[in-house]
Image 1 (cartoon, rainbow, N blue to C red):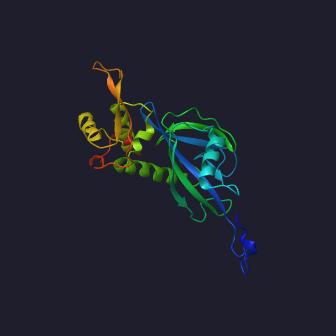
Image 2: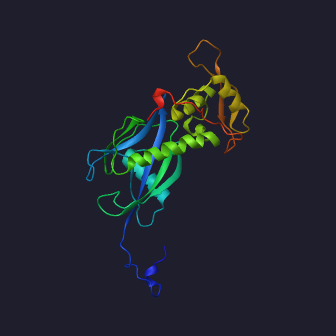
Length: 248
């Protein structure tokens, strides 16, 4: 990394220093419910409060590298199979951290088969909690979490992101459950199946593979994620009000 202190006329002390952190809103599906990964803060400020996993960038570290490191240190989730990680936005409002001026680069993450979480580093403990039941979070993490949920809900409409919630082999019923849980609404199974199978590259059938789903009907066919990145046409959420279980 270059040292601008040697640039003639440049004073690196001309501006007040500030810190850069990362925060992660990590979602999964467990027991048919949307869950979020949280840590209990072990130190002030907000000691004992739930917060999103995250922490400060180290001097020679990118934001994504810091996000993966903090996720592993604070929750034990290292090298998680199928982890989808994407940058959400930057939060830079003055006063968002009582210690000093802190700018946070937030990430949204999806885990298809969530492993057990274990607190470490600055976190007293880590746990998966049902989305919407976590209570007020530390700092401005309620806003970050809500923004991440909105981002995911929107991207389900025009991308193949829903398959990131699913295991490598899944039924269309399991894929539909992703939409229903994130959107908080019920979808017609036959209509959903028709739209998914009519969308090129969304899913690919696994020849000869099926799974019993607990009902009395025939076993459900298994699918894998297709090669498409976006949905044409988009799979739009219903316009009516969400079901009671999906309200935030």
